[in-house]
Image: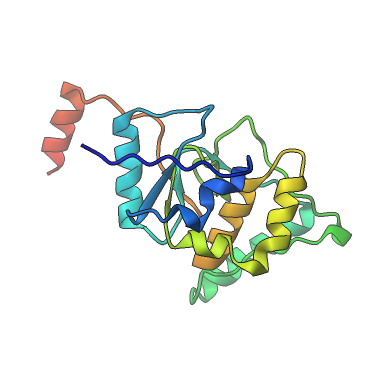
Length: 192
């Protein structure tokens, strides 16, 4: 039988799910929101397998893509062009400047499977080692901002910090699995 632990923090804070005091025993942490959405066991197994092969990245089923300003899109295009010419390191990032009119936002009606900048916590996998970074004293001002903001953007904070630490965009897995049919089995056996 599996062990089950309940953590009851003194204050109701979305960031508590990332607190290192949880001391997870496994390297992988699966986050599920109390209000869903939830995925089938087979879908979560596929997500875990993707995380197992890429444990340095955040892996999730509900990706979001930030809306970029015209200035940021131009900067991103230049970075992509430079990276094609000289692919040495993929740790470049698009800057954000309020004075230039940049705003953080995303379309919450769509789940962009490709080119996503972040993933929602529910159904996401994260390595336990990131917990200590998320609660490092240097990020206290960011955590305070998250707590005081009306929408509590812990999802944006976690994805941004993990992306910056790892130099990797979040990876996504499908929320639906294709059922195996005679056609897919025949195609797979023909290919192999």
